[in-house]
Image (cartoon, rainbow, N blue to C red; front, side):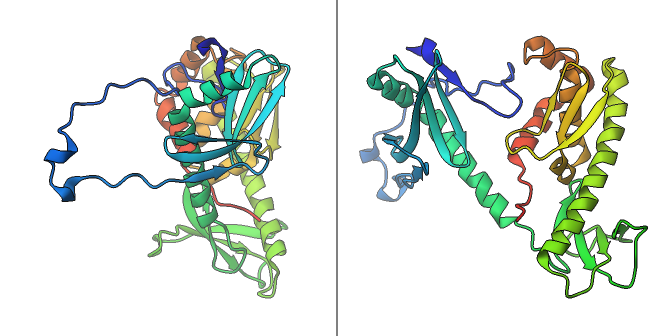
Length: 303
């Protein structure tokens, strides 16, 4: 049964240094509850309901209700993926439903943990939704920047100019992005102008970092494309083409550096084998920390 299990992990594939499955852990010996004072008996954890919008099966896992989408297809393994919508379980045509349910039960802790992490992440993302108006704040290279409508200036035809503050404001803002728009500008106008500016900065920063890491990895990149893909931060092709999501520009430069080094490393090793991760480590010794921050930190929601 265990041979059937295969997991869909993060954007960049599994890291041999990190075990994403749920290990069997022996519980420590505890005193019987009857011998404890009434006030020390822990409350049961809050039960949650996780429902996929296209759910066609339901299970109770670790006390939580999980309604998931079940799909059959031409594959050889049972697979699990947890995304914004919830849990999706894929299975071969020949596997019995009872075996699928057993696989779900065996990995219930892993599934619930991923569902909870995803829910918390999206809660943070929605809390960070950008308001497209004068005075709103958004992250640029990991630091908060404030939008400022300034109809009296034109900024070299770009319509926007970043001005650093002499000292951080009380709310941590370190700069103002002055936008050549009237104070009556609509939300879509403001969003379009900020996005255009961010994409220009993304191309500039990504190019600089590609040029920095390529010689150190002894590879040559040939083309940079800014991506808006919803499922990955970057990709690389053997011909030297690199795709990077432009919204990486919201993150600190060291997190961007991890993604750049990751994709350039694929020009040497086109898989996620131990040799690949050794290649990444050769230029980013702390890549595991940065990789975790890329997954844990939430960027603001647009639209």
